[in-house]
Image (cartoon, rainbow, N blue to C red; front, top):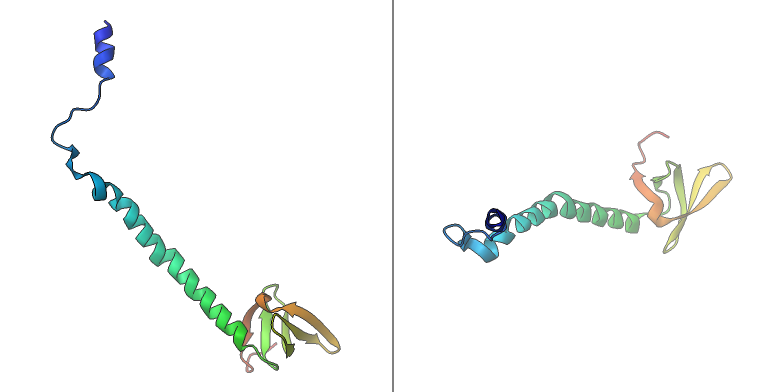
Length: 109
């Protein structure tokens, strides 16, 4: 009666299939990491680099859109902030990181 339970609890047989071990067991994990790198990590790094370059190139007179959806004209630029003119006699001091896009001068407001 108890011998059936003991037989069921025994380890796996030691023949035939066990050989691949080391690298073969990590291959699916490596493959998943490579796919994540090319589909998620690399494009995100590229987008962040382009945004950083855009922020460095912002200058007085550029038309910009903030991440909050505010459209305006750059009045002055410092290292980390800029002054944005959003209407006549209305200026807003804004962190550079919150600039979402620089618009071309031909686009309408």
